[in-house]
Picture 1 (cartoon, helix red, strand yellow):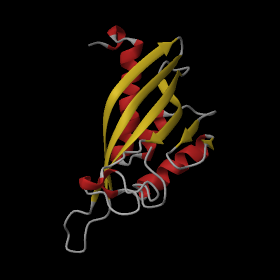
Picture 2 (spheres, one colour; picture 1 turned 90 degrees about the horizontal axis):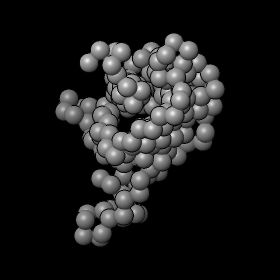
Picture 3 (spheres, one colour; picture 1 turned 135 degrees about the horizontal axis):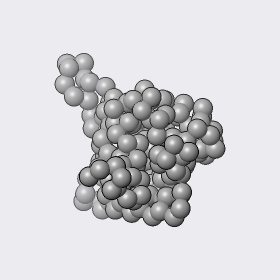
Picture 4 (cartoon, rainbow, N blue to C red; picture 1 turned 180 degrees about the vertical axis):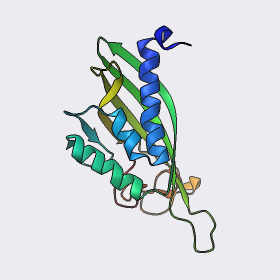
Length: 172
């Protein structure tokens, strides 16, 4: 499909995918390129609101530096475009892992669910860029027979307090 034939919805879907792909690759330059230049904000699950380009990009740099592996499987993706503003809602099904074990084997993997809202604006160059991202954790209640550990652990033994970056936060 030629660039001219793409719809705004398809362009926003591509911009949304570029956001997650940059994080998966740990590519801060690509991540910076998908965000607007100013007036941006982000809320990572368990974090306060971060405003401004420096704070937002610093938060992603910290997350990527403390996350050895991350992969997003986006579901329930809905895109709405009105004029030069677009809203994407989705569920981030996140698989992440820590550093490799001493014997060289893969480190532990954990899964998590986050519902996200990504707000895009059409920039002066015509590209859709992220204006705001808000991620909220999905709390999963497990039955006692499901193998949940003590202390109310949720999905895959993650209790929600430690996050997947090991620093008390959660990715995106």
